[in-house]
Amino acid sequence: MAGIFVSLAASSNDMQMDSTRAVPADLDLLLKSIGLDGLAIGKDLFLELSRSSKSLIEFKELLAAKGLKAKRAQAAVLQRLALTGRLRLATAAEHAVATLIPISWQFHFGFNALNPRGRYRLSRFAYLRRRECGEFILETPRGFSCLYLHHPLCLEILYILSSGARLENIPSGPPEKCRQNGSLLELLLNGGFIEECIDGNCLPEDSDLLCQWEFHDLLFHARSRMGRHNYPGGGQVPFLGRIEPQPAVKPVPLGHRVVLFKPDLAKLTHRDPPFTRVLESRCSVRSQGNPPIDIKTLGEFLFRTARIRSQHHRENFLGSFTSRPYPSGGSLYEIETYLVANNCTGLKRGLYYYDALDHALIHTASPTDDLELLLADARLACRIENANEPQILIMFASRFQRVSWKYRSIAYALMLKNVGVLQATMNLVATAMDLASCIVGAGDSDRFSVVSGIDYYAEGSTGEFILGSSAEPPHQKHAPER
Image (cartoon, rainbow, N blue to C red; front, side, top):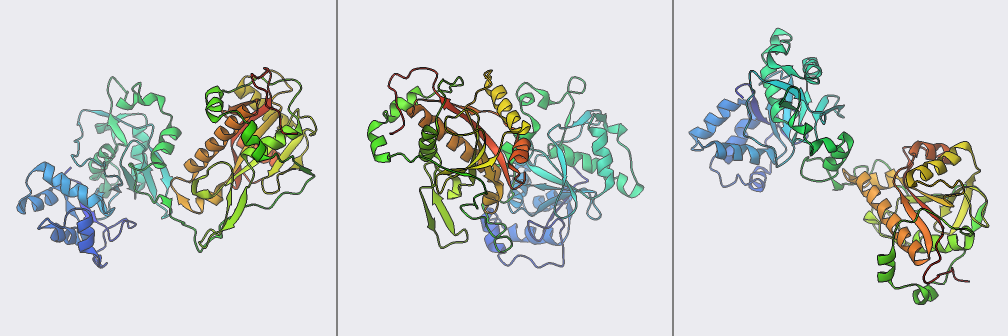
């Protein structure tokens, strides 16, 4: 790793070390937070790396001169410096073609060496994207760092490594850059972007364990959880002062209004089966009965699962909030409920929006080919052959910006969890009401956008649920309150 240069940026957001910038005013506090305050050379080391880049060899010699000769101790110092988010590992002291930034406490500073005779291949989990600063950045959910690319030569090398190549086959590039090739490959190796091939062109990631991870699944898992990145997460309110937050209750669309039945909850508390019985008898029921569900039963079901119980105002940046029968992350309740009525007594076929505040259905679209395809998708996902089923298809649409306005890194993961909570709530209530219900595993968000006329990026379907009358006579029939 002789060609790797170590430096400290002025802040975690800066790419390069800049000697013209002032040393952090809270340096003592910063050193204490990473455990270097008790090290005699802590402050000197921080100042030295903030003013000029050091090759990795020079860095280790500097530590050795101060009494830290053991490799483990030297790696521990690098590890602690990396916790500041300022540590940079570059291919050159100046005009580097690439810069590696550790973004996790798990980054390994043992620095594996390249095998001169080895064959290396780019990981199928590695991906390239453009950052807000305009530069390309290489990342992988299998690694603990990101690599900024400053020169087109890097893209050529990545292209060659995508199908696997021996080191001697890597092009030299322009004379002023070619000597950085080895350093770039070392950063790619230690960043987890490439691995040495085994058994021909195979990588360790081709094992039975990792081959069952799809790229998008592992990326979503790694980026929406802590541990493998240092990106801002949680309630960061990144758009505060720039964009107004969405209201707790969105404007109701135009259309014919169908007022729904409201049950007496006090009576239901005495008539419902015990919760343990509901929980233990709950199951997915795909076949539905005849006669079909009626609008009164549907009204009771929606009232018990998805209505707005109350609205309240808080003295904070988000303002208004709602309370509903199911929990929601941050009390944001971004989910809007839509129904495709396919076979429901008292309700004509079509698409409806559920007005959770006034407990009513708004007819928003008549049957179309796209609406029929939404039903067909649900039948396919649930292995249903009867064209009259599902009697009711419930679609959940998330107002994305209601959540992403407040949360970073976890916003979409939180929305999916909220959908799962509402689906589970509906499944339990359907069981208590002796209705047939089943959570649908997949749906077409684009087709929902076409049918509803709502912008795909503003409010998209994130889950589905089918509901109908029960085909089997219940052991203890529960009818909607009359």
